[in-house]
Length: 319
Ligand SMILES: NC(=O)c1ccc[n+]([C@@H]2O[C@H](COP(=O)([O-])OP(=O)(O)OC[C@H]3O[C@@H](n4cnc5c(N)ncnc54)[C@H](OP(=O)(O)O)[C@@H]3O)[C@@H](O)[C@H]2O)c1
Image (tube, rainbow, N blue to C red; front, top):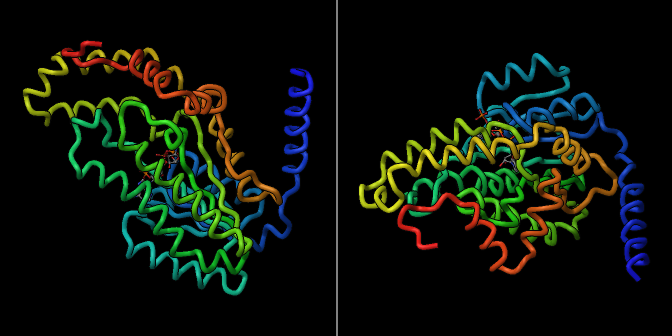
């Protein structure tokens, strides 16, 4: 019985792999709009798709990011200045894209831009902290998508949303996960809305990779800043050595768990854009596939036990 089940799973995986090999034709006529191309996955994807012959429209947050990308890529690549938390800039970008793509429409938008700070235990945060992350990671995704959706419908193209494994399970620091849970919900409803139009909506849920978003020194600086502004009674609850203990865990566990091979994620993004039969969801990274996703399906008492066992506890903790 077990062998039959194993055989069926294996058969399904081989079938999915073979089906996923075929790529869409006429890449040089297909425009792909990517947000957050200054660094990390977005930057690598822009370069990778440019190499493969797609017409990349790279949204960059900084002028430096635009200049560097232009230097490396072919002259088929276009850059745009884009802050995904600014509705005005998103509309201006959409107008430029409309002119650029003409009657062909836009083949794909990749909602990649994202931020991870400010982050801290929820009781350290102010409502503005939540707003900042949601503005970029969630409203930015929705706003950018809506701004180009008519062009994507015209091309019967794709929306690729960068979520995270934190969109499937929420560790102890909530803001980032809230934004990614939102991306998941938007992604799922949009996928069902767009299916009748021949538009595919795909989601990428990476595990933990070594980029600016997960940079431990930036995260430590963020924790110090959050700590400084805490009222004394909250500092007393957590204990004067809380930050040191947190930094030890970051050094000893977190940094070692980050995967440096960013191409694992970029290949999934490329597949979502370019495969004739893309997958609905991608979970790049061994940690995502074999640990975080399975943990997300466990009963709450198991996932709680895992997080609480590994969390740095406040001084007053009775656990
Ligand atoms: N690294 C991971 O482990 C991981 C895991 C799961 C999901 N993700 C997601 O992957 C995506 C890409 O992140 P990454 O890991 O490649 O880190 P990254 O190198 O920091 O990339 C994020 C990009 O977004 C840009 N950005 C920030 N705020 C923006 C704004 N308001 N408007 C437009 N662009 C903005 C950044 O520009 P600057 O560089 O100029 O700030 C940067 O180029 C994010 O959505 C992130 O949540 C990452």
